[in-house]
Image (cartoon, rainbow, N blue to C red):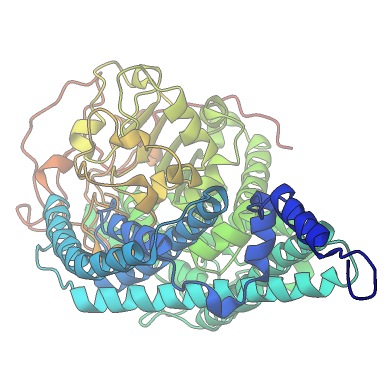
Amino acid sequence: MTSTGRPSSAPDRSAAAAASTRSTPGPRRPGVRGRVGAFARRPYTDRHWPDLVALCAATLFFWASLTPSLVPRPWYLQGVIGGITAAIGYALGATLAWVVRLLLRRRPGERLWARLWQAYWLLAPALSVGCIAESARLQRQLRVLQELPPSLTWHAPVIALIAVAIWLALLLAGRGVRLGARALIRLLGRLLPRPAAHALGALLTAIAVLVGVRDVVFDRGVVDLADRIAEATNDGTKEGIHRPASRHVSGGPGSLIDWRDLGYQGRNFTGSVPTRDRIGAWTGEPARDPVRVYVPSALPAVFADERPFAAQARLAVRELTRTGAFDRAVLAVAGTTGTGWIDPNVAEPLEYMYGGDTAIVAVQYSYLPSWVSFLVDKEKAGQATRALLDAVRAELDRRPADRRPRLVVTGESLGAYAVETSFDSADDLLASTDGALLLGAPNFSPISEEIRRDRDPGSPVWRPQYEDGAHYRFAQFPRTDLARPPARWEFPRAVYLQNASDPVVWWSPDLLFKRPAWLDGQLGPDITPRSTGSRSSPSGRHRSTWPCRTGYRHRTDTATAPAPSTAGPPSSRPTAGRPPTPTGCARTSDSAPPPTDGGRTEDKPRTSRGQAEGKPGQARGEPWPYLRGHRPARRTPT
C-alpha cells in the first residue's frame, strides 16, 4: 500500500518488463534483400575504393594481355591493350566481389584486409615487371619466327604507365556512370516504389550508355574524325602519280570519268598503269597498253540514280566498252578494300604476264580505312562488287563464246570478302568465273568459311584441303603449298593466299570465349603455341612493315601462284617473261611455280633477267592461276 492507500504497482511493472524482455527476440540479421538496400543507402565515401578483389582481377587481366598474339605488337599498343584489358578485369572482379559480399554473412576482419593489401602492394609491382620482361622475350622470339629483326624496343615502365592511365580513365568513367545511375534511382524513388525505381533506373542508364557510346563516341566522334581525315586524303594524289596519257584507263583522254573525280586510290590505280613500251621492254615481245577501269564512290551527276551501285556498274561497263576491254584476253574484276585500294602486286603481274592484253575493273564503295569500313560499310562492299559482276557477266553473255575474255576475280582483305559475297557458294564461284585469286580473306567471308568448315579430315584450318584440292587450294609458301595434295588440280582453279599468322583471317568475337581452331593440332609455320586467340586483333602496324608471307602481307609478286600451260589462241597465252616485283616482295627459292601436271615437281633451272641481259626468263607461266580455255556456264545475272 502507498501513502495514499493505493496498492503499489511497481513490482508488477518490473515483472512485466522482465517478462517482456525475455519474450522479445533479439535483432535479426537482414537477409540478402535487406543487405542490398543497406548497401545502396551507404554513403559513397564509406566504401572501399578501389576494391582489393577487383584490383587483383585487373592485375591478372593485365598479365594475361602480355601474352603474344599472332603478330608482334609495339610497346605503345601493348600499353593500350593492357589498360583496356585491366579495366575489363576490374569490372568483372568488382561485380564478383559485390555478389560475394551480398551472400556471405561473415566477412574478414580489418586486420586480415590490411595484410592482404600489404601483400598486394609487395607482390603485384614486382610480378608485373617480371611479366613485362617475359613478354618482351616472347615478342623477340615471335619476331625471329616471322623473319623480323630481333631487336625490340620494349619500354616496361612506359607500358605500365600507359596501362594504368587508360585503366584509371575507364574506371573513372564507370564510376561516373554508377553515380549517375544512383542519382537517377533516388529521383525515381520519390515517384515509384523502390523495386520499380531500381529497375527503371538501371534500364534508363543502360540505354543512355549504349546510345552515348554508339551515337556520340563512335558515330560523331570516331567515325566523323576518320571520315574527315579520309576525305582530305581522298582529295589528294600520291607523289609521282600524274594523269595518264593512255586512253585505255579511267581518267585518261576520252574517259567518261574525270581525273579529278577518281579519288586518291583511283588516281593511284589508273595513274600507275605500266605502258606497252615498259611491258614490251621486259618481255621482249610486242605488248598492248593495259586497260584499267575504276569507278569512284562519288559518281558524276549524269550517272546518278536511285540505286548507286547499279549506276556504278553501268558506268563501269560503259568504260570497259569504250576502252575495248571485252576484246582482251583476260578481264579481272577486283574487289577493293575500304579505302578503295587495289594491290599493285596483284594487278601488274597479270598485265606483264599477258603482255598488256588485260583489263582490270573495280568500283569504290568507300574511302574510309578498312577497319572503319568493316564496322559501317561492310555490306556495301558485297553489294557494289556483286552489282559490278552481274553487269559484266550480262555484257559478256551478249558476245559469242569464242570472243569473250576470260573472267577472273581477285581481292585482298575486305576486297576478298566483297568478291566472296558476290557468289552464293564455292560451287557458284567456279561456275561463274574462269578463276580466282583471293588474298587474306577475313574470317567472316562466306566462301572461305564454307571451305574451312567442310575441309577434308586431317587438314589444318590454316591450310585447308577442300575436296582433295580439286579446284580450291590455299598457300602461304606457293611452291610447296600449291603442290599439295598430289591429286590433279582441275580447272577452273581458285587460289587463296593466306598466312597462318594473319589476324584478319582469324579474328572473330568467338575467340573471346573459346579456343581458336588454329591452335589445335599442327601449328602454322609462323605461329607460336603461346599465341592467344583473344588478342588476335590486328596490331595496327602498316602492312609494308611486315615481310612477305607473314602477318598481313602475302606473296603477290610474279611467283605467287601457278599459271597453267595455257591453250587457246596466242593472244590468250601468258608471255614467258617475269615482271618486276612492284613493291619489293623479294623472291625466294620457295617461289618457283608449282607443277601443273598433277602435283609432280619439276626441278628445272630458271633464267633470271640479269642472266639473260634483259631477255625474259623461260620459266613456265608463273603468276596467276588462269585457266586454259575453260568456259563456265554462266548464271543469269540478277
